[in-house]
Amino acid sequence: MDQSRREFLTNTAWKGAAAMAAVGAAKCGLGMLPSEQAAYDRYNALTIPRPDGLLDGEPVLQVPAPDSMGVAFAVTALANGFVELADNPQMNGSVRFMAEGMPQAGIDDRVLQVRMTGLKPGTRYWYRAGAAKLEHPVGYWTKPSEIVWSAVHTFVTPGENAPSHFGMMCDTHAHFEQMGKITKKYRELGVPLMVWNGDIPHSLTNKREDFVKHYLVPPHNAGYAADTPIILNRGNHDYRGTAVKRLGEVMMPRLPTERSMRDFALDRNFAFRMGEVALIGLDTGEDKPDHHPANGGLSRFTPFRIAQATWLKDQFKRPEIANAPYVVAFVHIPLIELWPGANPGTLLEDYAVWQKECADLWGPILTENKAQLVLAGHIHRYRYDAATSTRSWAEIVGGGRGDSTFQTLVEGKVENGRLVMRVYNTDAGTIVGEHFFAPRA
Ligand SMILES: [Fe+2]
Ligand SMILES: [Fe+2]
Image 1 (cartoon, rainbow, N blue to C red):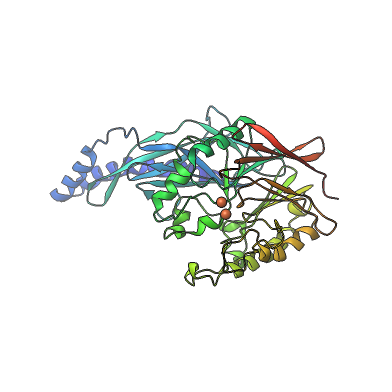
Image 2 (cartoon, rainbow, N blue to C red):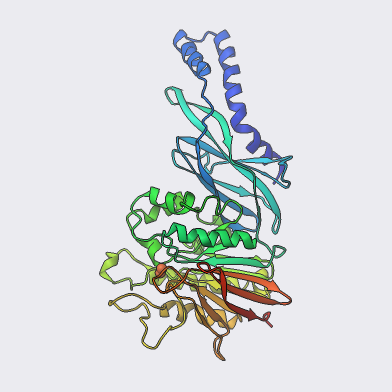
């Protein structure tokens, strides 16, 4: 980050109040009206008590990229948000980022989002999130409280030099206690980055507060993403309810600089390296065809899937993806027919068991580029399908909550020159599957 930006970010907000007081004194000397002087006096006289309890839960790291990292967190009153970032746990020489917004920083009474930019790939950072409560002692004149800070947390940015290590969870469906077993396990394992592979809500999401509960303050999961960045890859349930278009107010989309104008709508697809592994995120969308009456004529998942195919093809032209020893793609709905005659997502009856349209569009591109693995969810039952002579990639379907099934954590790690995928039964605390992949030729 250049020096001028750092100084701007560090100094702007807090010099403002002092400058206003100084201007007040000067203006007074130049003949301030009594009413104006009274306003300045009221402003300066207001003392805002330290707003303990302003932060609701721990910060949630999200949308990781090699050169940026997002953080969102919940607050209990109208506030502005900050993140301080340093390359050491003592926070020496930290720089400060403000809640997103230009020309005015973001303020909100429930959710604050801050993006750290100008980061180095594969680098460990320490950070803390903070908020200042805002009062309005004189009309619209805004006065911030002192900042209340979270504890100091840490993360590693993705990149070719990052650890070759990642995880996947799926189909948590707002079963927060169950989810707590997964989030505890990946923290025990030291997984540096998690893909949350769809179906986060249980039913409809009809207000923003539902997203706040799912992502920022999930019960039984305190601090689940404070030191482990989360990438959200949506599933069919994530498209249901009247508030779904407000998801970005809680979980940030990717930076526009991560894609071309042509791909502007694809604001959650991702492709980056985590060490030797290229991680690619693809969105299978709803589990019913666009013309299903449930969609009310609003759905455009077919063009969305076609657009992602064009995007996917181009990702393999990027040297860091083209040269990756391992390629792992993430989808919510499986790309392999799970049993003969299983619903392929094109029928009006019932719902998709696999997504044939996506398999036809994306499968050949993955095989052309010798991708080794697709990680899916949706079925709520762990399953492994090996690669074939005509399909380079295997598929692991993660387990979700069900009466006769168990919820999985899928961990990927390069060990001794091969990618090892371990599937944990998070109910029993056992490993139920291990799958090994050689590097791409
Ligand atoms: Fe599900
Ligand atoms: Fe699903």
